[in-house]
Length: 302
Image 1: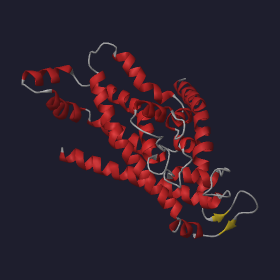
Image 2 (image 1 turned 45 degrees about the vertical axis):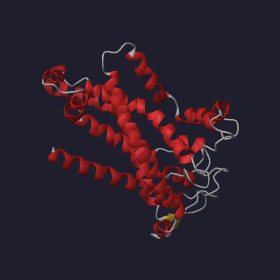
Image 3 (image 1 turned 180 degrees about the vertical axis):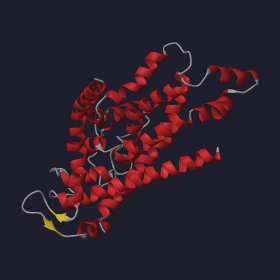
């Protein structure tokens, strides 16, 4: 009877996990093997794939569009992270206090997280439009600017998309930091106050060290999300102007799903796109592994 009961429990568990397992196999495992196959082929989505060995990888080594997009990705990710994470932590510390209306403020800062990135990009396109954008009209009326600033032009496009990314991400990381702060016992901060510790000293010597595990997780998520982000850029600038905001996953998207507006890619290139996808995934993996290594070294030192 005991064996029969255990078999039923195992069967029930297998039954409930089977849908998730099937979805993982279909949408995760199979595409990985699919990419590994076609990155050695010349295949444009029609006709018979032609095996070409490592030619796709030789091509990408001299593909300046790809490597320019990699540089843009690191500029975008670095600019986003260096502002978003400190700002999210400061907001979390402030809104973790017993302030009046803190729940409303938390909701306001978190609201951009639940809005589609495409919708956000459309709204900010209206705000930053060079000719009749809301921001330019506001600056001209105040006398700060005599004519419209090209916020989406070659000079300011990357700065603009970084600012929009910060606005959209800071609330998400703020909530994660608040969750970590609430696990820090109040007794420790009260003891530090009795010993004469100030706000900055408590933050640096108590809050940050005790928030270490959460901080490591948030930084890892922020790095991966920043390197993989492209949706809002695609809607806002389409990688332009003249490739100034072309990031590597947007370039990959163009290769696999070309559109009439994508001037840098004229036809679908599944074989070459698979090779580029492998390289971009490898770049993200190397950056993540390097971060894990440095964080472990830092933990040992501390």
